[in-house]
Amino acid sequence: TPLNNDKLNPEKGSVQNDAIKEEPIEEEECHRDVPSSSKRVVSQPWIRIGNVPPEQPQPAKKYTPCPFCTTKLLVSAIENHIQLVHKHSWLKFAKRCQEDDCDYRSVHDSHVKQHAEAVHGRTYKNWKNTMRLAFPIMTRCPFCPRFIINVTQFNKHMNNDHPTLTSNEAKIFICDSCSFSTDRCYKMYAHWIERGNRCKGGMGFDYVAAKQAYKQDMIKQQIETRKLANSLKRDS
Ligand SMILES: [Zn+2]
Ligand SMILES: [Zn+2]
Ligand SMILES: [Zn+2]
Ligand SMILES: [Zn+2]
Image (tube, rainbow, N blue to C red; front, side):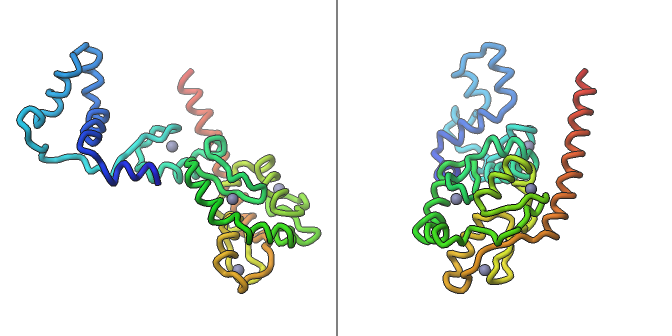
């Protein structure tokens, strides 16, 4: 990933710059109008004596505050955290794969591109042409009574009517050909590509798993609403 490359090959200068940014003392010094050259000498005395500092911060473990709750997290963990904790923000924040039949999302453009190259090739176009992405007649949404025709319609319906459930972790998709189940249809596509001729059918829904996910989501939403109400009360 592009974000990690920086960390794996850190230039000495950039590591030191990062260290400066994370020093809260620096900010106070800024307000006191200390010239930037003397700032450096204060926070990094080893520059003056020409030695490597005894405890340099580990460049591979960089923590960044979550943009929504300011919890400090590893850069590599932020995406997952936003997806699970800040569902509404995640939906706005992440880029979606351009294919209608797909529910892949990432905050990194490069990840979306890599995913599309891996999944949406000729094999996938064949599935569309052979109606592999269509559901059997009278198939219902696993979260409400609406009838669902195909994966495209299901994804649209999820985004419009069950947005908080689009990032649920319940394995609601089941492969018709084997016992594999997963939480995202893009993972089912990866499964089909991997299985080749061993899995030739379509996919269906696990209604029991979906029902549990629905209940848990309701509880989470209620907790979030209560938290928000409490914080508004505190502020006023
Ligand atoms: Zn957060
Ligand atoms: Zn996709
Ligand atoms: Zn529904
Ligand atoms: Zn399968």
